[in-house]
Image (cartoon, rainbow, N blue to C red; front, side, top):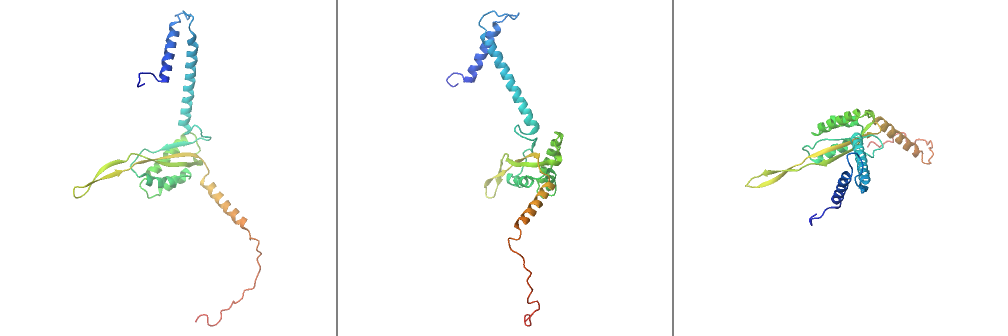
Length: 228
């Protein structure tokens, strides 16, 4: 392009335009061909149909991603994120780790009783994501916070005025939280599986091949002089 030439895509587009103009000029208003050289017309029509089909498939895939939150998802899911707000990503990651892998109702309950300042915003985000998933037709009782991650925002730099005519730089971080809701096990199911796993572990230990023997208890009475 710097040398005055054309890119391959631009050259192909110009060639297709020239063929289209030649084909349209070779057809009269009655639909009869004025010239015998109209070979490019069928190729142009096929290319247009192929491009239209490709755009239709892209539009359907985009609509599916917007509805279910992912094109390759085997089960329906819902993705939701907050706007970028003023908070350190490290502090927000603590809340993301706290709600990750938990049922949606339990995650909202955790944020309700959390002492963190950003817990209210995270709680509102979880509630909105749950309501939007319910509008899609998903079962709210089976929803689990499958993924929760934090993205960094802009770091605004401000002047930090100090004494003796000195100045430093003060940074104001920002971050955003993104979550993905999918179907998973409820809290009752997880608790039941944990109890069953503990029971199986205890039963697998057994007696270790040692037989218990009833032995007589000796030295039952306290001997004189022990309290001295």
